[in-house]
Length: 289
Image 1 (cartoon, rainbow, N blue to C red):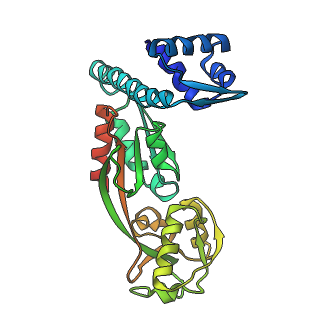
Image 2: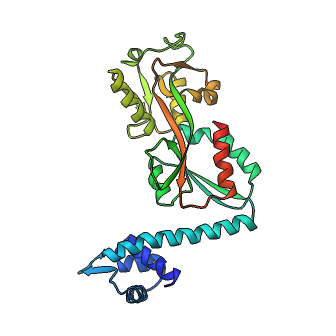
Image 3: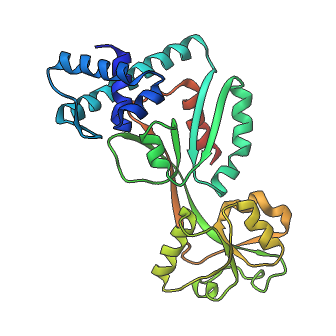
């Protein structure tokens, strides 16, 4: 059994279509079919059932897929570990983060990280589907809201933050020391769209407080929201620490009584080799926040 054959097999598991899998592998369909037959002959079991134009995995196919994924991952880990040993501070680091406010706040960290690891290519990918990106190995590290315990993942809690109401300094509520939940009802607001984790967290909190809020304008950009606040379009409810990034706009953050809070954590696959630069990134995140 060859690694190449396992790559072919896994692509077919993903596509469940011989023509599509062969195309993505850059080989002919007869070549793919022949290699799958070689695997099946070696194992003495069919790996796929061909039901007309439909291809489905057999029980043996499901078992092989489970172990083949581990084999391919371990081989990748070995390559990365050796590269890390021989070419320190090189490589590629992919990090998925919550869109909007969190990716915006990482700019200063990324500048410092680049100074220490100038040869490491870093991709910060905003996503509302961080968990699956990590599990599917599309990224190395996920940074987002705390998730449920999962034996496939290592999890590192690193920050808990409250939310505040952000208003202009001449807003009617600007002189308040604290905002009551009831003060938010009927208040003109600019917010992230529903479906964004920050907006959904606030909506859930509103239900617990037995209040309802409505947004005049919605945008997925933290910068846009604060520009709208500055223009007097409305107030916004955001993580309290964001004021450090937007004080220059003449905006004030007012604490909210019994504020919604969110717990942030970093997570990565337990079976994945973490390079020295990846470990340094995790450490810097904890220190930064």
